[in-house]
Image (tube, helix red, strand yellow):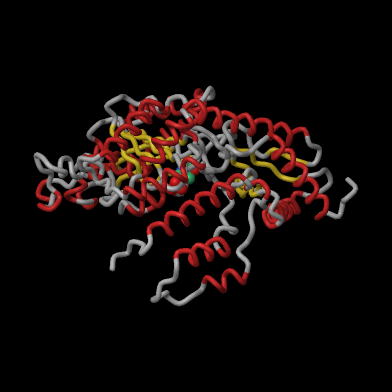
Length: 484
Ligand SMILES: *Cc1c(COP(=O)(O)O)cnc(C)c1O
């Protein structure tokens, strides 16, 4: 007995019902709370022993609808602005089903899916202003894409064969970036065996952009101490405030010392598709660029993109070298096994899925102009929200708004500084628990901030009005100042 259905017609009918249900669920998302905790009875039902005996797909689907579907992260909701999350689209949902149906293996091979991944990479390379012969690969997300760039940097700039001889064969390697750099950089330094201390965290100015001269001074000091600087990481959109480093200045600094410039554009890189592209100017001069499509590209998880300017830099970092290519992975002159590992040679994964299909379908159906329009609308919404906050007597803006992130707090006159952090923490929890909206948090100069990151194509102006009113109302409630 295979694992295929005994009755295909039943499965077809149930599948149609699922598609209907899911489209209705997305269509009505605004009617539900932005977030709901998983209730105890659902948790109890889900905690089952391993199911040795199967059930009908219909019964399993009913369990999904009852205990799983109602309690998502919430990032599909128009008032979810926590961390940096994407919304997804109905097109993305359907593309995932089609991709899973074909279920292709994307190490490489002679097949349509490989052509589609090459095609979307060539579009993305062009849209990001990289040279047409740049190398690229779709990966799990920003963390992997950033590590991919840093791996290429190390092979290109260490000065010895790190892949063959390891780290022991040379001086300690160091990499530079601002203190606002996302924590992937520490994961990268640890994963790459260099240790967290290899990352030199450089201070930022009042605008949360890297202090370029401080970075230069740190490089000079490290060289004098016998270290081997190999890369600078520039941020196009930091997580806390959305700041973008002066990427042109970082390019010049990297050139002064012969270093690699990697840009983490996890979400910010997408601004290059819009009328606000000047914000990330210089990004196109990077040696490598990492960005996500599952955030501000509004595509379903997971899909990130790793690009290198040098067409050979990714294979130099990842392709099995010398005798490392096992016989079972060698490419053939004909048959399916032509360029067997075309994509696998550019990154960590060997077995890879058809991420490219949701990218291809989304870009073709929505069109780059419409996606860019949604991104630009989010930038405009952030600026408008910043103005609402500045114009409100009881609210305070905690960082300049440049991209799509607004950091604010409830701070009416007369409340001492010491009360504001716990108060705003409580307001944030109330916003989430009451299902009103989901911002997340950050801390800026010791001040707790309610952080609104708008990478949501479903948000409209009224959603931000509602947020501002709710923060002020909950704040007043909590300070007993209901009349104010
Ligand atoms: C989200 C994010 C990352 C990590 O990307 P993942 O897709 O979550 O792995 C790295 N840098 C920045 C600036 C991010 O916003």
